[in-house]
Amino acid sequence: MSKAIHSQYTIRFSDCDPAGHLNNAKYVEYFLNAREDHVKIRYGMSMSNFYQGNNAWVVASHQIQYALPAPHGAQVIIHSCMVQCRDNGMIVEFWMTDLEGKTMYALMQSDFAYVNLKSLQKANHEEALVKKIEGSIDEIDLKASLQRRMLARLKEFRNKI
Image (cartoon, rainbow, N blue to C red; front, top):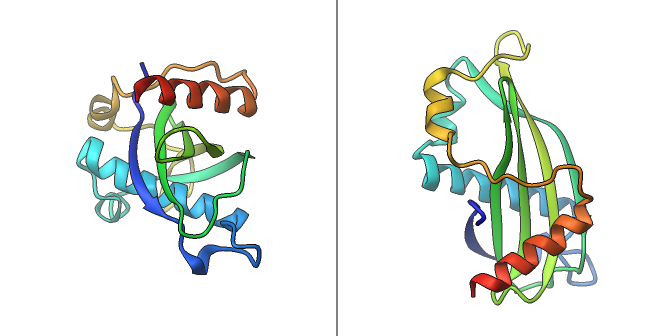
């Protein structure tokens, strides 16, 4: 069973390309904004407060697989979950579907490094933080292609509704 959390969003006109589809770069923005909401809901952590500390997560990389264009005005569900936690980082997976879970728009995997904000060197997660996030990792096959995982996520979501 997935440990993902999700929330609903509307595709905004100002975020679309001339064809009326969500601009490719905006998927990343939507996913990261959703994750900020999800972290607050799941862990009770405000990212603005978190980044006032000594250490924080920074993006090391994103991989994204687009399936279909998300049209202007569409109501979508953005899902996110941590799929790997290391001493000094984590991998989070995001995916966007329509409300019914019949259409998958995109899936993104992001690798976040945990760094000291002053030195910008990698840092290990604090023990209190590890305790807060343990049990919320969604075990998946990270060797599977994004396309294969996209299909698995869509199938799992459809089975829930």
